[in-house]
Image (cartoon, rainbow, N blue to C red):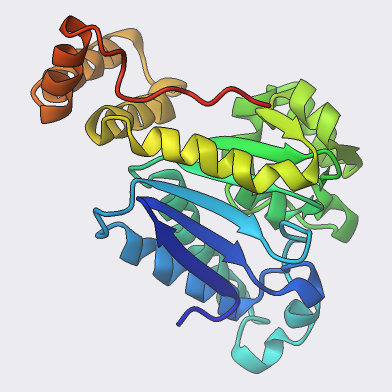
Length: 267
């Protein structure tokens, strides 16, 4: 159904797997179109509680498909208007990922280069295998960053470090990515899929209302002001505490049953 992708859902946890292993899951037009369509469809799937993004064949994503880019004259993307439309379509996908009202976990193994790293950073939580390699590779081709990177990168690492990573287009590993704040956790490659699923299963048991409000508020916090955030806090709390989940969790507290979900301890 989705060219270049695999999608499955189990117990409220959906997994999107980039599935072009022969190109290290490089993003071509078909994959981009499929991912954009799938994300818009998933907005209406209320059985989905948490989404995992990952890649097939031991790699996350090597970036845009340069071979497809070179031959793009055949599909009209070589003109200025065609290139602009490509970015308009891409930005629609970036917004669909960043504004998705449920948690998104990126599970990165192998390469995450250029647009592939930009895709990984659309996740709310980024987990990485010890063998993961990252690179803001755009400058190597005389291009500027895309896939929302001008938005996500400085918010995670600060403006000066973002400039260094984009200016230098250097490769760095999982340990440095964690030190920079791009990655939440690192682990052996064989442990990555289960760790991502364990966190996803945990979040799938949390209040979907509270998670959605929290994600939305944090996404706007760095471009907002105190009074706006206080208003979001009060409005959001009113909605969250009116949901059935709050009453259930409160009753569990009084019954001394503990919280309805528990963050998994990393092994």
